Every structure is written in structure tokens, then in C-alpha cells.
Amino acid sequence: MKIGIVGCAGRMGRMLMNAVVEAEGCTLSGGTERPGSPQVGQDVGAVLGLGKLNAVISDTPSTLFAASDAVIDFSAPAATVAHAALAAEMGKILIVGTTGLSKEDEARLAEAAKSATIVYAPNFSVGVNLLMALTERAAAILGDDYDIEIVEMHHHHKVDSPSGTALGLGRSAAKGRAVALDSVWRKSRDGLVGARPKGEIGFATLRGGDVVGDHTVMFASEGERVELTHKASSRAVFAKGAVRAALWAKEQKPGLYSMRDVLGL
Ligand SMILES: NC(=O)C1=CN([C@@H]2O[C@H](COP(=O)(O)OP(=O)(O)OC[C@H]3O[C@@H](n4cnc5c(N)ncnc54)[C@H](OP(=O)(O)O)[C@@H]3O)[C@@H](O)[C@H]2O)C=CC1
Ligand SMILES: O=C(O)C1=N[C@H](C(=O)O)C[C@H](O)C1
Image (cartoon, rainbow, N blue to C red):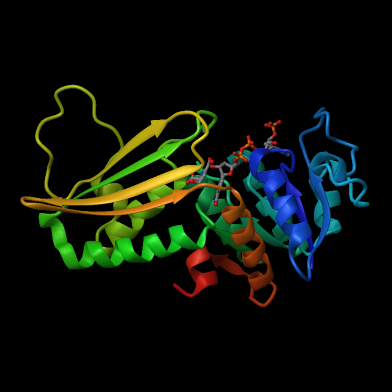
């Protein structure tokens, strides 16, 4: 399977290229970066320090899509929405890990998924997707005598908040309680905000250093607290998961899928 990587010189882009090179049955078809980026025109192997791999970094997404069966996109929301339209037009598989998409952006992904196979997930690690399934179950069992708070910490370069994973965990908790997340979420607290209303799902965001990604879902009641935690120590887990999703997507009809679909969770 020929897999290309958009935003290939980014933190995740480099991990994704390595994961494709190492995966059995996959070849790296190339990458993209923005026009004017110093990597444009280089061989992808030069960015990875691996010597020549005979695939180039371009600034033209349509060239990469034409050379690929699947494209993996961990870039930025505006770029991802444009790539989804291209995947639909060219009938290619798209794996989306970008976070921070608005509701309108997500509607555009859903539109593109009418003619392209798209897997969209805020986190491609097996562990986090298991945590989402456990969170849904715990929320259903514990009920709203247990206050749900979600705490996340990431490196100081991260631009979106709360993380896509934290919001995904919130969605799992809300699903377990059969409510819509956006009717109960509290994304921040500052000043005299009053006592905590029952049923709220709260978020707290920490940023600092080189933290790859830590998430904890807390269920706190009078007398006890349950905490479910995941800590990523390497971005390789996200990259391997995205390549696994691309191989899975090859056998699927067009549609919008999640990593929980890929894992059967
Ligand atoms: N789902 C998951 O499992 C995970 C998701 N993520 C998400 O992935 C995204 C990227 O994270 P990260 O790698 O740390 O960020 P980086 O900023 O390191 O990488 C993003 C890359 O995309 C490039 N890019 C942005 N816009 C375009 C464009 N229009 N065309 C081509 N390239 C473009 C950037 O270039 P430039 O620098 O010029 O802007 C950069 O090289 C984030 O949304 C993050 O939250 C991260 C880890 C795991
Ligand atoms: O930006 C990151 O780094 C990460 N982003 C994703 C998110 O927003 O949840 C996933 C992971 O935690 C790393």
C-alpha cells in the first residue's frame, strides 16, 4: 500500500514517515509541506536521516494524493478540511489525526466521507481507545453521583485546548450517561463560578515541557474517587496506530470511521 504524509516535517509527520517505512506491505509515496518550506524538493529520506528513499516532499497536495493509495494527515484544521475534499475528489483513503477542528470542519469531513474512506480520531494509540471504552462503561455504571473531571497535560508547543483526546474522553463519558457533551461540559473555571452543578463534565488543561500526552478521567463522589489514566511516552504509538488504520481502511467502503471502529472496541 502506498502511503503519503502531509505536514511531513512536523513532530508527528516525521514519526508517521518512519512508521510507514517500517510497516510490512507499505511504501512511503512522499510528503508535503507548505509552499516556501525549506524541506520542499528534498527526498523524504533526507528529512529522516535515512539517505535516498526515492520519494519527494512537495508543496502540492494533489501530486501526493495522485501517487498514494492513502494519505495520513496530522497537520492543522484548515489544511485537513482541504485534504478531505481532495480525498473525496480523487477517491483516496484519508487518515486524520489533526485536532482542534470546529463543528463546521467536522461537517466537511463527514461530507467528504460520502465518497472517500476517512478514519478520524483524536488519538490513534490502542491504550487511549481502550480508555475511551472504559470511560463510557464507568460513566454508565457510576451515574451522576460521581462528578466527572478530565485532566490533560501536553508539551508547550500544543496550540489547541482542551486536547482532542480529552474532548473524546468527555464524549465517551457523556455517551455513558446518555447526554450530549456540549450540554454539560465546563471547559474552564476562573473566579467566583459557584458550586459545581451535578452532571457537569469538567476539563482542566496543563501545558509544559516535552510531555507527549497524559490524560486522566476522574469520577469523584462523596467518599471515594475512581481515576482512569493513560500516559504516552512516545509519539510512535500514534504513528503506528495511524498506519494500522490505513491498512484497515483499504478493506472498507467510503464512510467516516473512528479508531474504535478499527480496533473493534
Ligand atoms: N490523533 C492523534 O493520535 C494525534 C494527533 N496529534 C495532532 O496532530 C496535529 C499535528 O501535531 P504536531 O505534529 O505536534 O504539530 P507540528 O506543528 O509539529 O506539525 C504540523 C505540520 O503540518 C504542517 N502544515 C500545516 N499546515 C499545512 C499545509 N497547509 N500544508 C502542508 N503542511 C502543513 C506544519 O507546517 P508549518 O510548521 O509550516 O505550519 C507542520 O510541519 C495536531 O493537531 C495534534 O493535536 C498529535 C499527536 C497524536
Ligand atoms: O498535540 C499533541 O501532541 C497531541 N494531540 C492529540 C490531542 O489533542 O489529543 C493527541 C495526543 O495526546 C498528542
